[in-house]
Length: 464
Image (cartoon, rainbow, N blue to C red; front, side, top):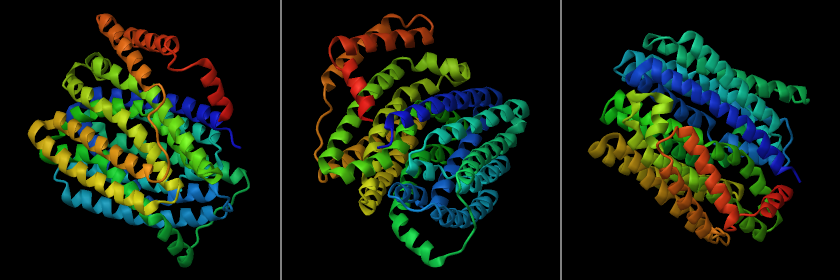
């Protein structure tokens, strides 16, 4: 059996570095560009995310699952060829639409340049290495890309007038990531050819379309909030919301690391027995509670000093948004487990229907609360929708396998409350020191009251 622990360490260490580099890039750009130009950049990122999802058509998830089931390496050419075709069509539509429909010329150009990264993502074969459970090379690619991006941003972006260089740097970083993985694939004996195979493409799309619908709708829910703010409020409001959400998305390294591991692992577990799948889902949920609860609670308490530290006093309005939006982190890490479980089980249509319901809730809730309460309302709408989505996924999963309340939940809550008291008592000192104090108190309490033991940690690593 592949080493889940080794893969976890590879991706975790790489993603910590990646997040820190990305964090530095965002903090630098927020201070250099100001709220309005920073908002334009985040609109560009949002549209790019939609473009990536649409052009992927669920093929990355399907490819990872097929490779995990033992498909030959020559299917990579089929997947890449089809994705390049979709990428070309998507980029054409985005460029035409952004230049014709976006009234602000600069924002339209930013969106157009960012869209070129869709070609890089079409060539990105992370999904192949996910299926093979070879995460080491993915870690290397995930680090080299943000290094190049940060260097280019610092060198080329010195004022709001340099905003297009931000998009250009992003494209070059994404191309480097794709190139690293393609080179590794070729060195491992793989061959790539562009080939048009209508029959094979139809078969692939028939399987991937339900995944594509679910993935597009899921991505829609992530990127709809800044779009809604841009339409209903202003670019400055987008900048305030984006400052708060960026911190949360960087905390989501937990989700970014675990998600690629879950799909092949869940595929293996459900192949062994339903009981194995139920037990591992329950165990995964338990560890996510252990990690997620203190982060969400601590972020709520330290919102203002964290925002000021990262973005400066110009963005202090984002602190109130962050206090609400930090709970998106807590909810979405559980949603990722359920989503990957449905895909691993081949329940593509069920997954698609649930994501459609989720997207509909997002549109209604985010639009309604944004109109009434601005960026804080946007954050509340996201949390409400994500919570309802989690309930839907949970009850649908209960129809498939047995789910129980995570072991020791009460002890985790007690440890989190004690951590919160320690944070409040030391809140007058530096925020980084307070964070360390809170983490230490939480860890000691967890061990002292038996919420987790060293033996459990050792057994977790051994079983992985």
